[in-house]
Length: 187
Image (cartoon, rainbow, N blue to C red; front, side):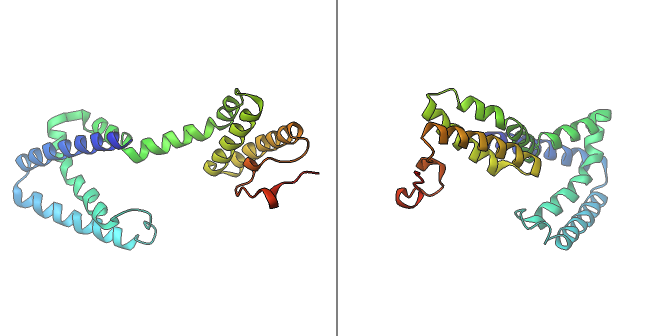
């Protein structure tokens, strides 16, 4: 994903530079600078007003200014691309790393029970350990109550299998802290 982010940033930088040159040739320079400064101030003020809501965003004010100034590049971009400007803008936004990462995370969460089932293809003890480890990971990734309940039901079945295989006691890999003296629940 690091390489993808770098490639995306390079692509956006190239498009932005081309759009700056095209906009500077399309509009009078004074008007272009005035609009860019006004939009930058507007974007900065909006970012300042939403700074508490943007606590997880690095440099929210700078990003607000950049996003607001990016709007001033549309006249030059539309002059170069014509009717394909909207399509190019949508593709750049949808190909953004944070959008792609959110989509990939959703796809991984949906494939949870199947990944747990694939973990069960090893030897019986190893399969149960892998299924338990994978279900723990899936439980941590689940964001909705419905997703958590699906994983909890699968974990319940895994625990039943583990208990049946080990004569009613639970092996150390089931416990987050492996302490054989306090966690060994042999009957």
